[in-house]
Image (cartoon, rainbow, N blue to C red; front, side):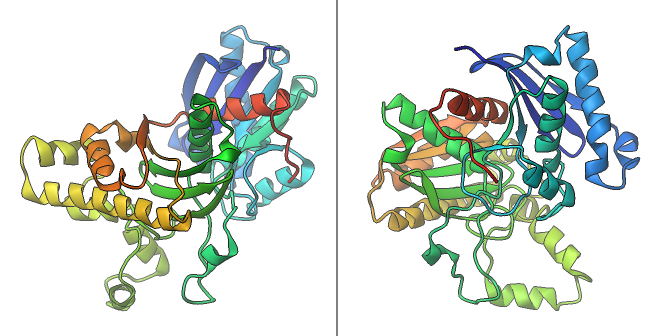
Length: 358
């Protein structure tokens, strides 16, 4: 059976939508919202009617009826930690997105908009797929070294899971039959150990764990970090967080988060500092991959590299040189979150997976 699917991925100042016939993208668009438009709403939840109307208007311009869709899928938001999968937009799930149980983020609107538009379409199914709060960590992985600071699972779940399932399909196996190490290299970096369909350990992209990235510090020497907190240079916790998440990593070293510029400076202009920083980034990612090989006890079927930085041949060549003794390395450059959302819905509609209840 063929399915027509509407996918919705809300960002802070835009709403990206895609229209699919099964896995074939018919068209997509990024609907941008001005700062003035967004500023009218004190709470993110209050933007739902405004963003919903923007989507409706665009679909009308395309002569698309909401009732022509079989399913609507939204980007998952900051919910309570949950296992991976495709989730029905139940009242409980929508309430937690509305109440921002894990924090305020535009992605919280994904499920809310999907449910709202699906209701208008005549009560068709609506889902979210693999939100960033997917938590399948084994208990061993939760201990950090202090009980007040447990390790948590925040990572590029949607893209990592989609790439894992894509690779499994290519080798004619089930994702649940494989042990994979998947590295997402983008504005944030996450490296996860996928064992039999579960991400049993992962480096947290947001809160300082693992390799540094274009804007984030990753793990830091704790003694130096404590001294930095009390140096007087940073007045509040918010200032410290900004220094580590947003102004850390490559940005702190090079004054830019543009990895293409850093790559060109390193490889074409032979800038020694750029080369050192670029190589250090690759080195740290390779160390994270090696760490996850230990988590999987050396039983690794494949290493998969994805995200925007995976477009850089030098990065893939170096990671392959350093980690191919563990397993083969394959690159899937970029990330296609709209397709991953559509695929999550298709798996449920085709009864390849059961829909999850929050």
